[in-house]
Image 1 (cartoon, protein in one colour):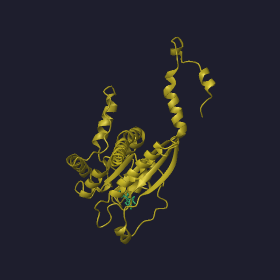
Image 2 (cartoon, rainbow, N blue to C red; image 1 turned 90 degrees about the vertical axis):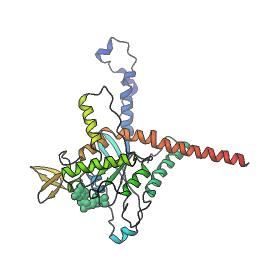
Image 3 (cartoon, rainbow, N blue to C red; image 1 turned 30 degrees about the horizontal axis):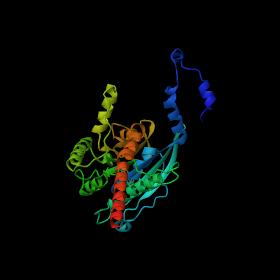
Image 4 (cartoon, rainbow, N blue to C red; image 1 turned 120 degrees about the vertical axis):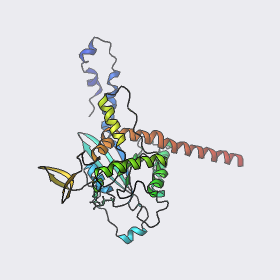
Length: 324
Ligand code: GDP
């Protein structure tokens, strides 16, 4: 809750400011902070990739919720004919009084059908529809309470069983890279040895470069950042595609209960950085880059869409005028 304005103005000045002339704009960051905490935050994450690669398991592990309680699993026959159906799950999560409305957009069935040509189309259409809705709301009368459903990030799951990217992966990412921030992940990393993970990552990074796929770029570090921060940032950039492991079960490892997968030879721990990049991915998504993902969506992807719309609207008006 905000304190009444008079009370805030009455608060004593910090000692170091008492002898200086103090206007008070140093409190601006606090004002922004309070306002945004009160309003709450929202974030929309899309997961895409072939079914069975562990998308829902990873999302549950990332946000420690069961988002897919009422999911209906399809049998093989249904999966062959199924088109890419897009579903949306929303949860409100709260941590230390900060509220986050998290929306997960799932694209089940992607890549399952016999003919997968243009299966990215419905995903691209979905992203455009959210931009269109936002554009309409923004140009309408009630701009104050716009519900923002734009997709801020797309986790693209790459199969651990192929040799690098498959043609479908290339096609999908190329079709979407100008619309959404793509973060590639190497699924089910526990099925690979550490050396295989390393080699696959290098191969995938090379292919991303070779095919001209523009994945989400982490912003460059400021030159005045400390060395530790710069090193962490470089490590994050070198981890692409994040090798991830998901699990819906808690197992006991060394006397501690952890999220993991139990095998006859031992346990893989989801949150152990020696086992996979899960923690790196979660920190990136939640702790360090969530705001940047939203900014890039707003400033780059949505702006492109908006410019496109305005151009075609202007062209139409000119055509109409010429005809008249
Ligand atoms: P989705 O169709 O992509 O949402 O995949 P699911 O999350 O439903 O997972 C499909 C199957 O893969 C389930 O049996 C999961 O237990 C299993 N699975 C999920 N994540 C992993 C993982 O990281 N490693 C392994 N080995 N199996 C996983």
